[in-house]
Every structure is written in structure tokens, then in C-alpha cells.
Amino acid sequence: MVSLNVEKGVSLKPFVTLRAGGSAQELIRGNTHESLSEALNYSLRTGLKITVLGCGSNVLPADQGVPGLVVLNRTKSIDLDADGNVIVDSGCPIQDLFLRTAQAGFDGLQFAVGIPGTVGGALASNAGAYRKCISDYLVKTEVATRDGVEWVEPSWLKLRYRDSLLRHPEKPDCIVTRIELHLPHGDRKRIFDEAREYQRQRIGKQPPSASAGSFFKNVNDSALAQSLHRLPEALKKAGVVPAGYLLEDAGLRGYRHNGAMFSKRHGNFILNVGGATATDIRHLANQAKEKVYDRFGVMLEEEVLYIGDWPKGSS
Ligand SMILES: Cc1cc2nc3c(=O)[nH]c(=O)nc-3n(C[C@H](O)[C@H](O)[C@H](O)COP(=O)(O)OP(=O)(O)OC[C@H]3O[C@@H](n4cnc5c(N)ncnc54)[C@H](O)[C@@H]3O)c2cc1C
Image 1 (cartoon, rainbow, N blue to C red):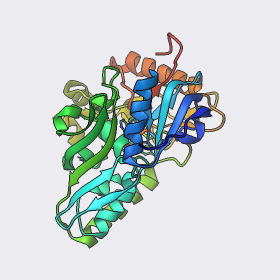
Image 2 (tube, rainbow, N blue to C red):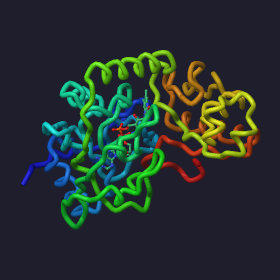
Image 3 (cartoon, rainbow, N blue to C red):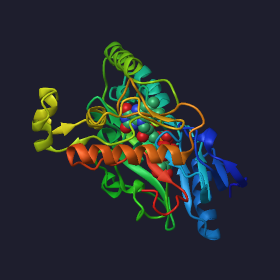
């Protein structure tokens, strides 16, 4: 049995990349995959709702706080064999996993360079970039639920574009504890060249201020894509409209509400440029949704997850 240290009323600001929001009612730091399942058992025993945080790079906690138990996932072990089979703790930063696997000559995770999240958080949102995503390499997932700890098939997670069961309110009480991936062999020089190129592109596009990356999901809508004259042909063909395109066209570049501001460099990044509350950030996001809806008839969907006790009428 692992002993758990429960902290009360801990501010979540330092643990989320948007640097905004209130406190966790209770907080446990999990350093081993066994401690994560113990934390789940504690939440089930005490009736506290559980929220898992990896690097907090895809969430916005309410200023009113997050009731129940927040588990900060600080697990990090990686077990890689000679055939490219990896069992990795869900709290391992995905960039650390990229480095470890690439150095051993395994291909695939270059897309993750510049994604500041854990493997568990990446799985929850099926994180990806440059036409690759984590589910491309997923074999099995170890989850702790009220029925115990078990390995489940990818279908259990209902993975889709930037989405999975883990993001939905109807999800079971659970924590992803470990993940098994399989990566093919690849040429080490090409892998690192690709990673460097992706990093270069990100440095050019991504603003350095506090953000949660792209705030909204891209839109799959062929008719809309065809109607946008400035959209590159490849995107028209794929029927994909980047949310940043719609936001910029609706005049939101540099648009600001208190300390929350749309980046001038990347149309889909909301930045905390100083002292923004979570309410400021969500207010700005709501204004943007309205403006895009008025101009294009499309309701953008957040990629960032609102967690905790948001007052009624926030959405
Ligand atoms: C500068 C920047 C660039 C980014 N670029 C990209 C990009 O190119 N592509 C992309 O897809 N994303 C990108 N993101 C968004 C984000 O980094 C990813 O979604 C990342 O994978 C989230 O991981 P996390 O550990 O921070 O998750 P968190 O934000 O901590 O959590 C996200 C969700 O996952 C759940 N969760 C986390 N861990 C677990 C677990 N172990 N078990 C169950 N549920 C869990 C949480 O409860 C929450 O609902 C970017 C963000 C930033 C700030």
C-alpha cells in the first residue's frame, strides 16, 4: 500500500500553462503508477470527484477552483525494448519519450517536439501535429477504474481528432496509469532532422507567452473550405479549415479582454499577457466564438478543457 500525502487548497496557477484559475480542494502528487491508482481509490472512498493533471497545457481551471481531488501526475518511467515496444508512465513528458526513443533509433514521435504535455494528457486529447498523432502508435492502455487496474484496447478510449472518452463528462472515474506504444525502426539522422525542422517551424509560429496552445479545434467542413478563397488548395481538398484562419478573418488577431489576448503571431492562441483570470480568458473565447459564428455560421469547439466549478452561464 502506497502512502498518500493529501494537500488542501492548493493554487493550480503554477500547474497550468495559462497561469490562471483557482485552487484544488485537495491535491495529491503521484510519482509512481501505483500511487496514481491509490489516489483513484482514495477519491472513490471519500466520494471526491477526481481530476488528473499532467502538465496542465490543455486545461483552464475555473477561478472558483476545482472541487474534489486533483492528482498531479509526476510519474516518468520509460521501458523500451530492442523491437520498439515501449511501456511508459502516463506522467512522462511526451518530449522526453521522443528523445529516448529517437536516440534508440525509433521513428514516429517527432511530431511531439514542442508539445509541452505528458503522455497521458496527449492520449486524452489524442495530441498530434504534422499529420501524426499519438494514437497512430498506441497498442494498449493501463487504466485504473473502480473495478481495479487493467490493460484496455485502444477502442476503449474512443479516440478521435483531438478527442477521447477521457475528455467527456460521462467518462468513468479513472486514471490512465501506463501506456504501451509500438514504434518502427528508423534512420536516426532523418528522425532528428525532421524533429529540428518541426521545432524551427514552431519557433516561427508560436508566441512565447503563457498559453494552452491552439485554443479551438480545426473545423471539418468541405463546403466551408471550398468557399474560402484564400485557403490553401491542400486544405480545401481535405475539407479542413484551421480555426486560426476563421479567427483571423473575423478580426480577432491581437483582440484583447483585460490580460487575455489573441496572439498577433498565431490566430488560434489565446495568451495570458499579464494577470488574466480564467474568467477573462473564457470571456474572450466566448466573444471569439460569437464573432466567428456571426461571420461564418460555424460554432468553434474548444480544444482547451474548462475544468472545475464554473458559474452557470459561463459557456
Ligand atoms: C505551446 C503549446 C503548444 C501545443 N502544441 C500542441 C500540438 O501541436 N498538438 C496538440 O495536440 N496539442 C498541443 N498543445 C496542447 C497540449 O500540450 C496537449 O494537448 C498535451 O498533450 C496535453 O497534455 P497535458 O499533460 O498538459 O494534459 P493536461 O492539460 O494536464 O490534461 C488534459 C486533459 O487530459 C486529462 N488527463 C491528463 N492526464 C491524464 C491521465 N493520466 N489519465 C486520465 N486523464 C488524463 C486531464 O484530466 C484533462 O482532461 C500545445 C500546448 C501548448 C501550451
